[in-house]
Length: 150
Image 1 (tube, rainbow, N blue to C red):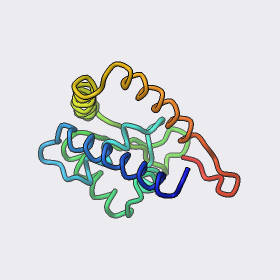
Image 2 (tube, helix red, strand yellow; image 1 turned 60 degrees about the vertical axis):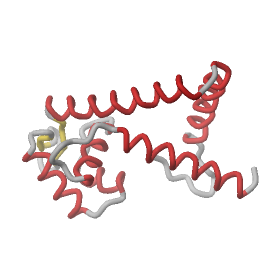
Image 3 (cartoon, rainbow, N blue to C red; image 1 turned 180 degrees about the vertical axis):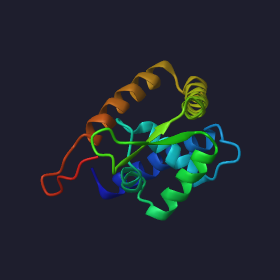
């Protein structure tokens, strides 16, 4: 693939990602930073530590700490001591936090489903499913020169 094709694809993926973020149900009263931290905490396989969220979101420790205070004050997350290492704190979504994240995901999914139905023919929808499988394979690729994983 040519450099121009790769740049074009990256731009197209960014456009869709921005639009999906735009279509998410806004969390009234929360800053964008707090909303991002809430989403990252929800995506974590295990309850995340604040440092995990900092690295995942590529944000400063102070920004994540402020967002966590905001989320905690809103009743969307709680801090729980790690069972194995009491010095560590884990971030856990409350029931309300889980509801907020689920509503936001439903809103994005609804928009995406409507857009696909409205704009794409059945054969294009099948092509999109195949492209999704290819993107998943690309996301799993580890370069021998750069073995960092997500």
